[in-house]
Every structure is written in structure tokens, then in C-alpha cells.
Amino acid sequence: METLKNRIEAIYRKLASLPATAANLQARKTLLCEMDDVLSTACSELDASLGDYYRECCHRVAGEIQAWHGDAARIWKLYSSAIIIKDCSGKVIGFDVNDGCTPASGHRTRLRIDHATAEALAKVIDVMFYTHAHLDHVGTVMADALMAHGKIVVAPQDTIDKWTLDAAVPAEICHMDDVHCYPGHQGSTLPNYAYAVKLACGKTVFLRGDMYSGEELLPVLDTMQSTGVVPDLVCLSHYKDSGPDPVPEIYGRFKCDMIPIHEWEFTHRKLGQSGVATQCYRDLHDFFAVPIADGKCHVITWGESLDFPMGE
Image 1 (cartoon, one colour):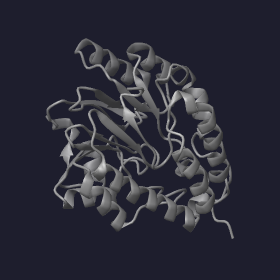
Image 2: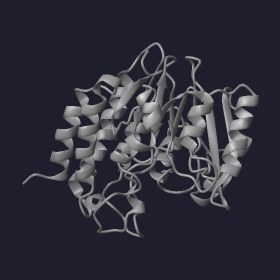
Image 3: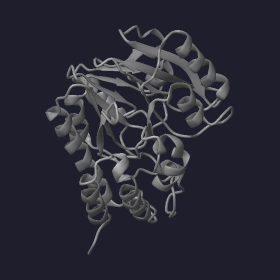
Image 4: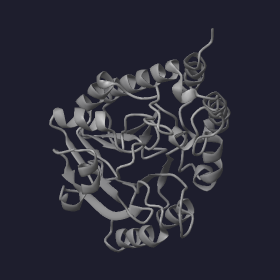
């Protein structure tokens, strides 16, 4: 019997033979749309084989991170908003590496990491930045594994208090070299920090988490510009509660590379339903059409990676 894992693996093998480049854009888009169709299956987040596939992805990524050495940086993407970057110094930085999809609609799902998977990732990640307390961004199993290995975890004080991340560094008092922490909120009350981190290769990466208010995001972008903090890569979704569309706003200001995130986040799909959860890969090609056309943005899926800066 063909499982969801079998179907996803077959698509992934084809994607692996097509690096994320402008020349492969249409072929990759076709395959990513096929992946949309698989993930659209009702109850896919409860499918044990899909959970097995995701954990295997994470273990493979941990091995790739350990083995990679290069002159600039390489970026890996995992579930929802999870990004991992290794730069030319060998340092590995994570952003919002979570525990997978847990819970969804008040239920535990099978699309999640276990302790062995968290251990594998914790061994290779040096620093983790969490933007806010929602479980599609922060991972308690992941964070505990990192702190047990003596790794640095940075998060808003609210996130530390909510999930008892006692050894974490509050973003409010983080003073690491080449790290800028920008306070804000998701909605009106949930503390959410955006981070700009300069890599050893001299390039700066920016993630806003779920800072969806233009009234907060635009001043952050203004501050970055006025203080010379220019992002070379921004990982973001297109979501907003107010203000301009963040994709053209940020791309217009900085002409930076972009990686779309937050697709197929199953806590946004009612348990047992079929269809899209947050946005799908088809959507991402529309929302990021301009930077994609310029060769400055590539859509990648769980476990995929690419060199940064793009095109070099």
C-alpha cells in the first residue's frame, strides 16, 4: 500500500535532482504543487508515515549540516518557520526550529519530532533564536535539548516564562555581537522579537517572526536602514494584520534574497479536514512572484537547502 511517506519521498527525490535555481523554476514548481496535493489529504498531520518522513528529514539535515563546509553560507528549511544556517566559520544558527505540528486543534499530531531527533539537531546547532511563544515557532523538546547541550537559546522573556526555558537568554537583554533584536508583538499583546544576524561571511539575515502589524514592522525597517543594518536575506511569510504587503515592502527597500516560510502549518487547518493549511507552495509562487522572477527568491520544502547568497 502506498503511504504518504512513499509519495512525498518520490517527489523529494525528483526535487533533489533539481537544485533551487532560476533554470529549474518551472520543473520545481510542478513538483511542489504535487506535494501540495499530497499534504492536502485529510488528516495528513495524523499520518504516522508522514511523521516518520519528517523525522528522517531532520536527521538527514543534521548530517548535512555537520558535513557542509563552504566559503559563504548554506540554508536549510524545516517545518513551518524553521530555518537553520551554517556559515563559513562553521557556526550554525537556528531560527524558530520547533517540534513540528503539535498540537493542532487541541490534539496531538504525529507530524512532530521526538527526543532522538531533537538531540541530533541540538548537537549541530550553536545558537537558536525564537521569535515568540506560539508552538509553530518555539519547540520545547528542541529548546530543552539545546540547553542540555549548553547551546545558546534566545527568546522573548514572555516565551521563556510560558515554556520554562530557564537557561535561555531574554531577547530584551541580548547583547551578542552582530545580533540586533527588535521588539514587537503578534496581534496586540503577544511579545514577538525580530532578529537581524550578521554571518561570518559578512551577510545579514533577518526574520520578523509573526510581527504582522505595519505600525510595528515599518519602524523596525526604518531603524535598520538608518543604522546601516541591511538584510541580504529575509525569511518571511506574506501575512499582515495592517500596513503594506511585507513582501514588496521589504524587497523594494533592500532588494534582498528571500525564502518564503510558514507554509503548510497544520495548526491552521481544522483537524480532520482536507485542503490547504496556511498557504501552500502554489500560493508562495504567487505571493513572491516579483523576487522569484528576479532570481532573488526560491521556494524550498522541508529538508531542502541552498547556498547563500543566491546565484553566487
